[in-house]
Amino acid sequence: MNGDKLMMCNRLYNDLSYLWPLVSFPQDYAKEASYWRRVLREKLEPGRHKILELGVGGGHHLSHLTDDFQATAVDLSESMLAHSQRLNPGVEHQVGDMRTVRLNKKFSAVLIHDAIGYILTEKDLIATFKTAAIHLKLSGIFIMAPDNFRETFQEPRIHHEIRSSGAMEVTYVEYEHDPDPQDSMIESIIVYFIREKGALHIEQDRHVLGLFPLQTWLDLMNQAGFDVEKVPHPVHDDGREAYLLVGTLREGT
Image (cartoon, rainbow, N blue to C red):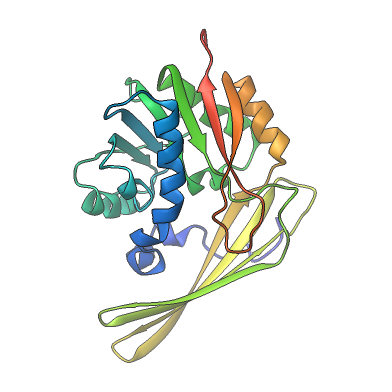
């Protein structure tokens, strides 16, 4: 991809992870989690089912489901898992890559929230979907919610917020664009203006995200052994088309 090759990637999940509680609030996920809970309750029998979230990040989305389900959480970033552990102390946490992790356990449902956006190739999508299948009981449910589809991505997309807590105020500006429409990636550049104890400093961050046609998601999930349905997921402020992709594991997978 084009752009500043020297800019460090994914700093929010590494050296800038201390900003996470300001950049993202747990209550921001309440409405979205209600759609996931509804699907889980419709698809699963009554009871406190075991669920697995891959790419849990700071655990804000999962925090709205832990009253109803017994959860296990996986993420690559130890610093983000630390945030999730503080927020979700009753959840089992494991460091792992959603493409390759193997817990030797079975769950009623596997969830991947916005972390699925960091999968950049069809090969890695298939690997991730196979991870989900391996961890599911027969007829288990796999739920994802890609933020973007090739058909609906319009650039540039700009988002900004001002958040404060105690002595720190963070203003962040996110700029999403597609440097090369011929590949399956887009780029998000984030600038953080951090004001603390009267001093201001500025940090830059870069995230590379996958961008695939909707049909690619459906086809690859089917290839991995899932019968798939699209459930409307109207959570984006700009009103763009969005779905929960709900896969039911086929017998014999």
